[in-house]
Image 1 (tube, protein in one colour):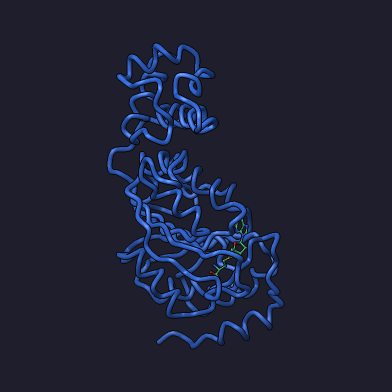
Image 2: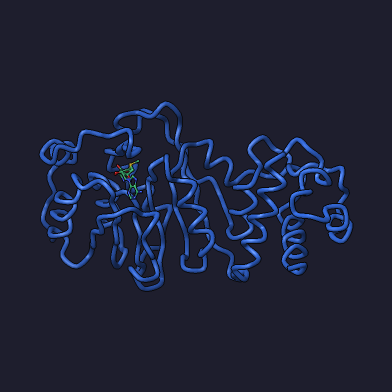
Length: 275
Ligand code: SAM
């Protein structure tokens, strides 16, 4: 039997964790919701879990109650570290705390495979964190990530829909993506201005060569940088846009938002082959 933990609200008061907007701190205090998030990430048996931004540790507790083998929690807010260390001591050998910026940590060096990511992300760095993980998606079995709902919509969006753009193409090129859960502002303390949502991403088995991902990043930046323009115009910055589109068998009068992920991949392969 593991030692009982103090109520989360008491933990927050004792460690002086008044939420800071600059750190995107909106805490999840409802243990049932945290357990549901851990469940979305299942199976966790024998897995190493990377949690970004554990804060007071509500989701961390749910992960400790799951069958995950080990949890590595990366937190930037120094005020939260002592409380997290207490949590780690209460569950010996299950939780490692890393104080630092998640944008700078090397997951491969921190923990062995198989790895999964589970996180209620700070909104201000959610998208750059995701792009970084997509570049090395082969390191992870899955990513269960809470964002502002609009960002989660942009990850799972289909072509020709309102939220389809660069984030959908890059995410779906590397992963199977689904919307797993939506949460109202009142689920958090303090409540954010907008709804939140969890996107669950499972990397495709075949990892593309890193250069192809970089090429896709270039192509999508050009195409969606001027999303209202026709491709023959928006892709000009890549050079030889007309020839490129012809080789890809794509009509240059189409707009970026109408292209399937596979069509973007075709363009990225051609740009890469051109060198
Ligand atoms: N996981 C907690 C929960 O669900 O209640 C807190 C989630 S809160 C939305 C985001 C957390 O990320 C905060 O604890 C914040 O301090 C932390 N954070 C913000 N920027 C970070 C960064 N660059 N690296 C690591 N943690 C960060």
